[in-house]
Amino acid sequence: MQVLVGKKAPQFSASAVVNGNQIVENFSLDQFVGKKEVVFFFYPLDFTFVCPTELVAFQNKLAEFEKRNVEVVGCSIDSEFSHFAWLQTEKNKGGIKGVSYPLVADVSKTIAKNYGVLAGAEVRDEVTGEVRFDGAAVAYRGLFLIDKAGVVRHQVINDLPLGRSVDEALRMVDALQHFEQYGEVCPANWKEGEEAMKATQESVAEYLSK
Image (cartoon, rainbow, N blue to C red; front, side, top):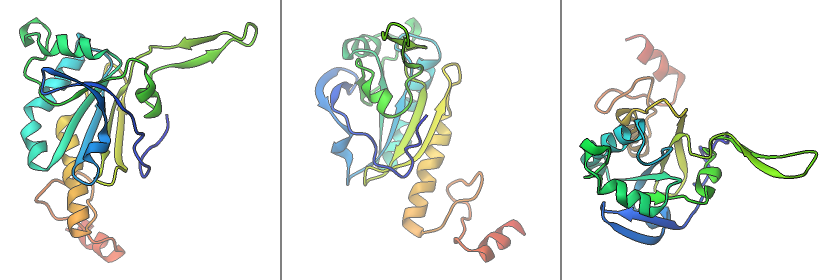
């Protein structure tokens, strides 16, 4: 796995479904640079089990992200047509109808590979020279918080069976925005509205003594 924190988020241009019902070409995160932070997350596959719980959970908290001027974008290796069909399917039939944030189609798996979340890897047979893919050719549950300059400030990657916490993603957004606004660092388990710290030994000692 590569660590992207502190680096520019890998660029891409791909098809996506936006607003839950519109297929667009050449979707890119570049459109948000200078305007919004982005929570860009990967999930393994459409029409599966843990995945719809995550996508619906992000939708249920979408207003909280929007209130913070943060764009939520999902991505999997499925095609835009699979995304579209899933978005039109009722929740009681395994669908995610009602999800409105963009879902990117990474059919070539290039985006997942560039973000370091592609499960498995290409392996060359030393005898025949043939290249095969070893592992599941889907994305791990990766999540990347990208700032307005297009730089990754936070990433977390879960294995396929392990659903992530949308509340934790919101907490990290709050921490980043607090630091950028006030220059204060955020201690363990910090939440919006709680006391943060100056980046000094004195401030740490004072915080720990409370």
